[in-house]
Every structure is written in C-alpha cells, then in structure tokens.
Length: 130
Ligand SMILES: [Zn+2]
Image (tube, rainbow, N blue to C red; front, top):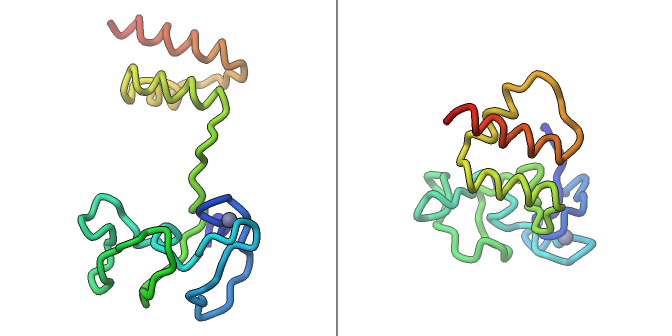
C-alpha cells in the first residue's frame, strides 16, 4: 500500500490496524472515529450517495463511525486545513488563473525554490500567453 494511514482529522499516523477493522476504533491523538467514510477509498463526494461502492449503503455522517462492511481504509486521508502562506499564495494564483498556473509549473524545467521568484515567473508566463 502506498502512503501511510493517518487520522483524517488530525493527521496522526494510525500504524497497524487490527483486522477486521473495529468499528469503534478511534484516533489515539484526537479520538476521532476512524471507521468512517472519510477514511475510506470508496468515499466520493461526487456521488449523491457519497460512495462509489455499488453494494454499500449511502453515506450519512461521513465523519462518524459507520456500520459499513465495505470500508477500505485509504492512506493519506488527512486534509490539511491550516495552509502555510506559500500554499495560500498558490491557491490564490490557481483561483485567478485556473489551471494555467499548475500547468506552467509542471512543464518548467528549472526548479525555483524562492516563493517570490516562483510567483514572478507565474505572472511572467501569464503575460506571455496573452
Ligand atoms: Zn486524530
């Protein structure tokens, strides 16, 4: 399995889990329920049922322990809420320019470490495309 299992709520590493995965398994750090849709590979907010498993029941509370038999834990379930400033700037650029900022950084050959230089280059690319 690629990546490691972490708590969806606080990012704490979960490590080895008992099998079958106990329904009332909680994070040792924040005590969030871990037998939850948010930890599951089948969780998919694009579906009306929030689940892409054809046999599983529709998700109700995605962050509370569920009775689902089809839960399949996914690694890296933690979604960071406190972005650092660099990420905020990146997010703002993406919001402004759509996907172009991401594409241009992907195709760039040299890696720019300085955030200000990165910003400048992103804006420079944008000007060239106009
Ligand atoms: Zn936690």
